[in-house]
Every structure is written in C-alpha cells, then in structure tokens.
Amino acid sequence: MANTYLHRTPSSTTNRRTWTWSAWIKRSSLTNASNGHTLWETEGANGGDNFIFQIKGSNDTVHLHTYVNDVFTTTRKLRDTNGWYHIVLAIDTTQATATNRIKLYINGELQTITQAPLFPSQNFEFGINKNHKHCIGSHGNNANYYFDGLMSHIHFADGTQYDASVFGETDATTGEWKIKTAPSFTLGTNGFTVLKDGNTVTDQSDNSNDFAISGTLTKTEDCPDNVLNTFSPLYRGTGSGSYSLSNGNTTFLNNASSPWANAFTSIGNSTGKFYTEFLHYTGTHSIFGIINSETIRQDKGTNDAIGSTAIGQPAASYYGNSGQSMINGTQASFGSAIASGDYVGMAVDLTNSKIYFSKNGVWQGSGDPSTGSNGLTITGDTTYVVGVGGYGSGGIKANFGNGSFGTTQLTGTTYSPTVGDTSAIFKYAVPTGYTALSTNGLNL
Image (tube, rainbow, N blue to C red; front, top):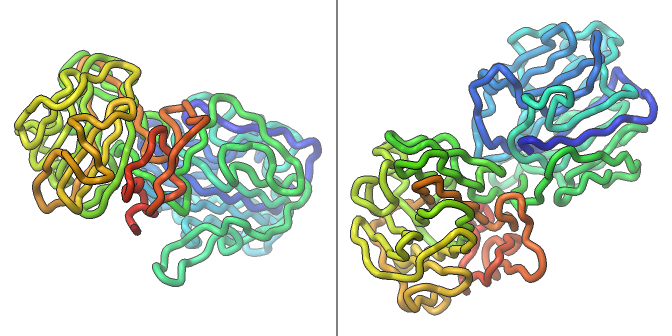
C-alpha cells in the first residue's frame, strides 16, 4: 500500500471510549527512518483527536501516539517480510484497571507493554469515531507515513472491546494462529469490514460504511491463509548494484547503469514442480533463474549474472539479452532474446532436475515441461530460491501467482494450476503438474 491509503469520515460521532480494530498485514520493507508505517489514524489538532497507530520506522515496534503523548510502544519487533501478522487493538477506557483500557494482540497473543506505557485516564475519549477523517495505511496529512505492504480483512467494532479470538484462532494441527474469514461481532454504528475478499473498499458488513482510495490499490492472491512467494528485501549482496523493490516486493528495478544487481525470493523449495512468470518491463539486460539458497545465506556477492561461477553454485538461468542459458557457469545457445515488454515463464521440476523457460507463452529450446521433454538439466541436492537480475537499469515485474504484474491486474483469460495452489492466477497456461511457489503449493 505504499503511496496508497484508505479514508473515510464518519457522518456522526459515536463511541470514542470503546472499540476494536483488527487487520492482517504483511510488511514489504524495513526502513530505518524516523517516520512510522501507519496502520490506523485520525486527523486532529489536540488531545486524543490526533490518533496514530503505527509500526515505528526506527525499530519496527508497534506504537500508539496521540497529539502530545506516546501512549505505548511494544518490545516485540515486526521484522518478517514474508509472513502475515494479525494485529488487534482493543480499547475500553471505561475500565477501572488502567492496563485493561488498551489491549494489543499480535498473532493472537496479548502483548506486554513495557515501553512508554501512558495508559489513558478512565473514560478518556480518543479521536476514533469522531466526525473527522479516518485513514488506513497513512497519516493523511503526511505522505511520509505510508504503510508499505499488504493489508487484508480489516474489521472495526464500534462500542465493543473484543479479544483476538473473535477474528482468529489457533490451528488444531499446526498450532499456528490463523484467520477466521467470517468473524461474528457486533458492528455498532461506525463498524465496518473492508478488504475482506480482494481489493474492494466497499464495506462488506451490513453497515455500508464505505471507504475511498487515495492512490492505487492492487488485488493480490497473497493472503493470510496462503502466503505467496516474493522477493526478499532483507538480502543485499556484497558488491551488488543499487536496486529497489516495490509493489509488495514483486517488482525489481536496478537503479544503476552498472554493475549487475540481483534479487532473490523469500520462499525456496527442494522438491516438486513450480511455475513463475516475469515481465521484463524496462532496460536492455535481464536474467531469470534459480540459485542454491545456501549461496544467498553466505552472502558471497552478486556482482555478476545468476548462473555464473562468481555468484555461487548450483544455479541455472536464462539470459534475456542474448537468449542463452547459463548452468553452473556454462553458457549455451538456448532461445530468443528478451526485450522490454516480453514475458518469461519459468517451470522448475526439482523432482526430475529440469528447468524450462518460455517467451510470451512459447517454450524455448523445444522444451515441454508438461511432458518432461527437452528441459535444461540442473544439478545439486539443495533448496533453490528464485532469482532475477538486471544490468543497465533493468526492471522486472514478477507474477508469483498473485494475478498481477506490478500494479497491472490480469484481466480476460487467465490460468490457474490444477494441482497444489489452485487459487494462483497466471497470464499463460500452467504446465501440467506444476503449481505456484506458495504455502498452499508447498503442501502439494
């Protein structure tokens, strides 16, 4: 939601003492800055009217601030950019016990607030539910406070303090905290449910408390009960060129004319068959492939193309500028060159140690991943992650099954795997037996 936020001004002022806000969030960046990443905010000029609930940019803790006071800061740091967090802020200032007036839950656990605990006085009235602008994902008066990431299933209860179990539950098999997709709670006058299924800001409760959008909100299949693969912002290779990630860490751009810069994904796999798509949207040099995850962990440097001996082995790639393949440092004639505007498909068969690449839906090198014929042979009994690279300001947009390239949503005829993650959405037909690299796909 970087550079995008939702906003609504309630038509009337209701209960400013008791309410609950619940949302699932997935962070995309960890920026070391004084500005925070806003979750829920109201604009006001005094007392509790100016209400900012955010993740602090300086240390990734959860923070609540009013116009003049820091209400609390947690000790827990939210630094996972791959998984989803469930955040519940439950307020009831009518409580006699000060510590019961504010309750914060993260993934179902009630948080111990030990830093700057300035609990409000009994019957204190926050700016929430007042007849002024409310924002999700940004401090509406300051563009430097955007939340950079994804949000889903945002619920608000006007007049009731709920605990996290209303909106989530512990999985009986895995012990993990998971989403309740249809929670039952009392809405109250200003209650709402948005971003429940897709990117609609129309209130999906019975209240019709719709929000408006400032910016662009892109739908993604990445959601709390199925985490899709993305590029990881946590890895910066030694000597790597300057690059940026955007659009929920699905868009890569090398910001320098040289050298090579490469980005690698957060989910890897050592078995099975998975499919990914890319759009080479700018620049003249691009590369697409897979690499041993141990190379990434050891940070051997990325000042070269994926598949070269300099970057670490085993690895396999398709070099877009020349159309060559590169397997463990060996280049060979393979397929057509990739120009700006071309789409690349990659099918990885770890069961049979093969990899296939397509250009605009046509498999290169006479390969056919559905039948297993003419694939490039990959080696090594290891866990692979997906990697892309650019040279000379090369830019690549990935579709890991989320159904979009950057902010461009796929429309018309689309394709989904018939096995594994059948909710994933791709531009071209998914080879038989292949799935998206996601938590649902890993369970194939």
